[in-house]
Length: 518
Image (cartoon, rainbow, N blue to C red; front, side):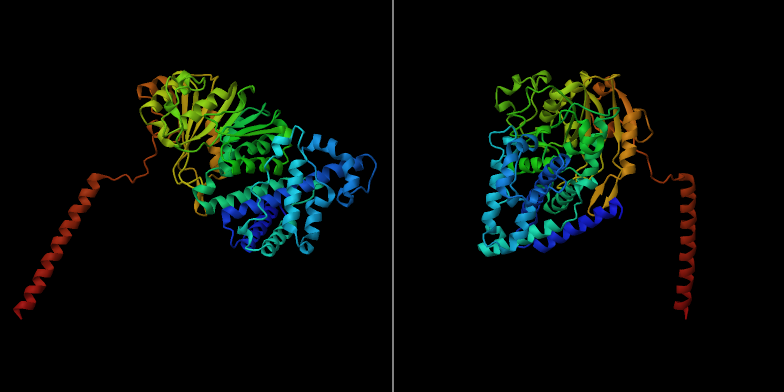
């Protein structure tokens, strides 16, 4: 089976699990259970593989951690938590809990205890904050699973069995990414069916890949990557695929305001085999309570911030003195925080770094405070490129968004505009960037040259003269695909039609007179 065939088979199985188990629990809520149990299986197998490999390397060729007693397993707890960030006793591993699930009348209590023990295993260690609350959304006692304990346990047994049946490969076969692929497919599947409430924190993979490629042009490694509105972490984790996780030297950083989504992001890191000491995901409001103040600036920043959300703005007198916003001399409107996020990212960006931000189109042309912020960005030569994307790419909205690329060290005082509004294929009920579409956009970004109907390099003085309007359509003239009409030829054809029409009328009149004469 090819990799794509394996992935298709995996997706088919996941869809079947969702179909079989969906009932009283709605799709978007139910993903918490599917993802939670998938996460439980992953960390169980990940830990087992780590311990087995270490023991067998030491000469114990037949060692199998899953068959140890809990008492025997305790000897390695502290050392393992220091390395992996958590610990699971053999009896509490996914494979052993699943094996006994059908005969466990207290399965809900068993799982609740296991999850609590996994989180508690990190207490007092540097991984404590990374594990805390990871299972909070996996409520095995929720009535959404069933009205009685017996009904809930029946559904939990099915979950354990179905997730256990997923063919996710052996670690020795280097197929660990199957867990990550499964997570991404689940997120895509549920986001597509959940509208805005589900899709607002999940960026389609092909868009995420484009952002990662744009920010790593000419680079084989970066110090670290950052997303101030990281959602489920899909943007950050693209760098693990584009560069290789070992080439993100200091790790993956982000902040997320929604608690459930914050937990999903941390779970996603583990599922992609990013160790706890290689990610730093914070919970909180990036605009009013930003984390990572004291970290060195980031080489790479990518983000798909929430569109047009409210924030404190000028109702908080301290904000105008915030070093992230004060250089622009004005705050983003209270009803539209888009450019506040942009200025935040600019501040966190290293001198040699690149930021790629998905923007709501209104920020490119609206007046007032937003126009003044655009003036600040252009006059200081921070805007490297604007890329108009096709409509209907994102879950929860059909709006045609754009990508703003920021740099602090440019080789010219010009801005590149790319009109990629027609670069898409239709996939299901959404538009998608194909690999060909993505490569065309990326090549135009790299070449940084005029391309008729597609790309235009514009001097910043010309942008200033155009009132700092950054709409791509103001600079890239689209191809006129309307049929060219020869007006002289058209008039001649009309004259012939009129003459012929008159002939027919005369003939009809003669026929009518002949009939009346009879």
